[in-house]
Length: 413
Image 1 (cartoon, rainbow, N blue to C red):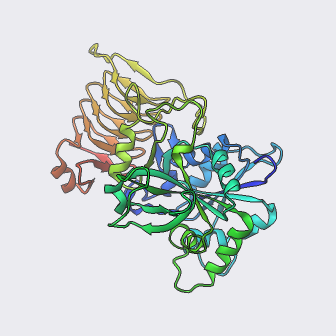
Image 2: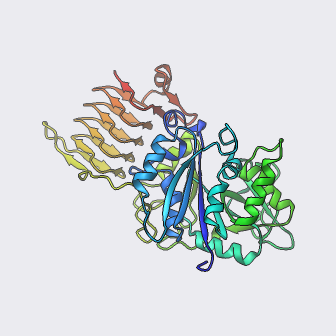
């Protein structure tokens, strides 16, 4: 890898309709996660930890907060030509926006022509995981393929939720077929109850990637999608390899979180991923200092837990509480609180995810809910206690009963 010039592209133009209302005012990769982070921080941390130093983030949909986060958090310029740069859609091929992930790369080919890399790593911006891409790059080079697709093993019962990779019968490192959400998938030769699901991460030889997106751009019937159009084209030519995440060894990982990968594209999956963070032995460990997840360094005081005027102690159990938050006689249990949250006397937050600067008033209750930034829960009010009442108030309630309160909303009794 050291002799090859590697360039990273993060596809961050996603609208995230299934995460509404959390994406009403921000791009999906900018959605807060795990207290101090944004979703994009996981992809960027993996690339940086893997040794990549020239990375662009292609943005489009409501990208202001995402662009600001990248510029403020990921400033590595000046280090031997290193940079992480946010690149909005620039309409270089006419007055039109990105028509898909492959079109985003097509419209950004000037970046590849300027840098002249040997290898291009293309990743999504909205998954939660750890991965050492240097190992995948080495496997890609050794394979001799033009494209390599990262894949994770999933139960065959979930095949209809993923792009499924079937390996070549003669060479299990090559992709024989790439199927989009099949209902009749075939299990793996070494594990019949599992399939290989595409992670949306790819490694390409730069010249063949450029050729592929140019040819795709000339097809009027193409959706211009990396997974739906570009990868199948490589597969049809016998030029696509697969990289099983089971081969990846991330420093500091445990058996419990070694192969963790979560698509947080729905409210319920987003909520469930937070549940994976909070136990004493979490399914996904944010505290792995050998492979850190980087984010913005906040100029904030530590979280504080104090007694209220009645002597009630601010307490927390099995929770993550971020910098600047203040619990005064409040109780937090099995929850994740973002920065600068304030919880007043007698309030309770249970089984919930709370974004920054939310305020929960005296004796208010938040249960099985997600509160976006700057939400105010008035004294004595409740959210998540009665899903039908929450629906009647216009809040989003998921099929599993998670209530979502949008940015800046005030909830009264």
